[in-house]
Image 1 (cartoon, rainbow over the protein chains, first blue to last red):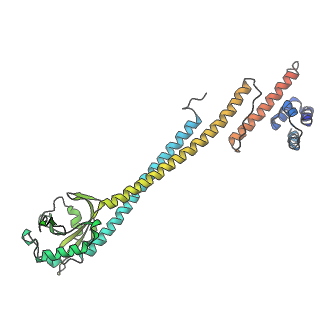
Image 2 (image 1 turned 45 degrees about the horizontal axis):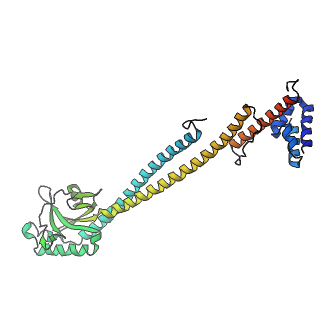
Image 3 (image 1 turned 45 degrees about the vertical axis):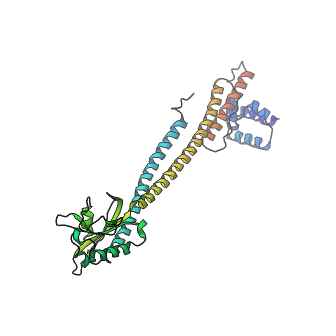
Length: 55
Length: 282
């Protein structure tokens, strides 16, 4: 469940630290804990990909 | 907890209700007044037409042969009476009274012939009888040209609208004026029906509009209250809360989505602090 989604938080941290992670959470409306409980569905992955591109 | 008099629901509902009432009352007054005027104008037209046609059928020379009480039921009187009776015909439900008048030297109205001069076989209205409380102004206008009273008129016999038209003799002089009374009950019935109809339509519209306003304001307030509850929970440190699902893509939806982002951020930061207590999480 959600391992791919959680990995995006690591990507965000690498890009911009905590601030980027906060922004990722705000845009996706998911904390890392919630992302871990969600499925790596194509819709969720697309959402996180878009969010990463905005950070 | 918002007091009811500060509530958006109360303010929205009361504001719209006041507005609707103002518009409705104005519309009601204007519509009913205009309709009453239209009905009255139509009756006046009918009266003028009726009086004009009937007066042309009465021989003015006969009226010149009827002067005082002693001329009641003389030949001229009876001829005029028969003509009036013929003119009224079977229309007694519409034409309440039909009569011929003249103005005396003092400007008072006096009957020449009244189609209902008999009551129970006995003469009740003699020739030259004074018409007390007569609408002199209307009668004077009727002696010049066909004319109808502007408003319903009440005398000892009831409330009517009256049409007047001059009767000419063979020399072209005005020998008298024909008066025809229409029972106002018909007019009032139409006006009352119209007033009631407009009244009930307006009441129905006000109720419907109020229901719609109440429904929408309650929906908005309910959604706002749900979001407020979540915000309060977050501020109390309770992050295990669910935001409502807002179906309409309105400003409330946008607010809800914003709160969803806030909740996600607070959850993330809380997790970071818990996982990295020594770093302080920031």
